Image (cartoon, rainbow, N blue to C red):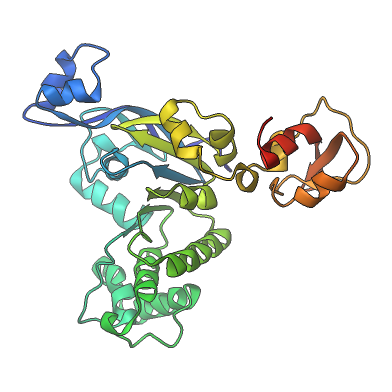
Length: 339
């Protein structure tokens, strides 16, 4: 996270579906569960969610089907009007925007990629990517130049004149990503963009996505139901159930300290040694001498050292800064499983 001021903030946000949701929510007694609300004839797509997304951060929102993750992200862009609470984008309450101002916000600040690629079958790769710029009213030369830039960025050089039917699934998804990048959005929403791809292509697209994020530093909200994908991509993860956020934290902390039984079940099959990094185990009150390890290294990366190093604690540094020392016993408990 690179800024104290959140790019997106939501406070006590509710999205209730039903006949008269605002009146129902206003009269609803405290403590009503998701099932209680459903018995009353309403669906709580989002229940009292408060969170922030910071500049340059990749927040992954995950949960099972029906957990509310897509509904929440649609609230962020006001594709859904919320029932209660406040959502701000760069300090502006989007609930108070006029339709015109909201369209401008989406057009100039937000990029969106969905599971269905939504490519126009009669348009080439280049014309698909240039389409949102055409909708902006940009001239043909300017939008073609920008489209060619993002085609190169996503690795589709030489396929500018291909049609969607001539592309693989992974290539089609690259076109979808390039189209959303063409407008140079500050905020990028991705709703399960890789879930329709086979495992090998999905892994390749995750690699490509991480490469792009390393270059561009976008503020990203990424939806997935795949915990392995979340762990691989996220700066922080928000796990949702029945419209509420069960826990929001870094991957390390969610794996080490699940806040609820539901979150624990999500993490129980995960190889913690591949998720937990030395920086998380470093303790400034622990003293150690000798060669330090990189705070970004996972316990799995350090396995050989942990087994052979006789020290009881190992210094940890990151970007030239000392983070303290990592107790070897704590790291071994994660590597081998607690005794």
